[in-house]
Image (cartoon, rainbow, N blue to C red; front, side):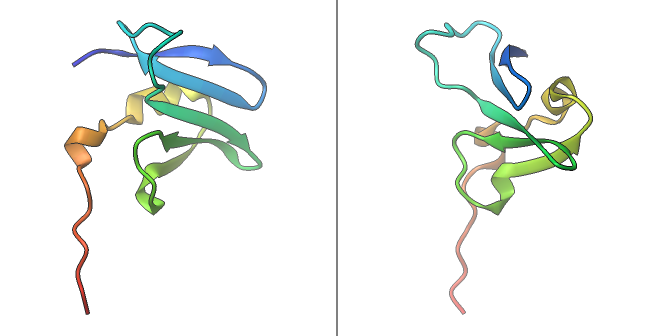
Amino acid sequence: MNEIVLHRKTETIAILIGENDDPQTATPLATVYRMKDGWHMKLTHRHDRFAWSGPFAEPAEAIERYTPTDVTGPLQRIAV
């Protein structure tokens, strides 16, 4: 698996990409947003409540907690 690197960081947003990804063409793996209580990571390819994690003290801390989407996979829907 590729290592995750911090591609770009401003005061409120940081972009995480794979170490070998081309920043001009690759889709970011995650975006880290600064909120009132710290930095929160949003996975790019998940669109549910499990896409978010945090808070973190710094965006670099989010890199350590990154879990690839292919590992977590889609959540099973249970009809009730």
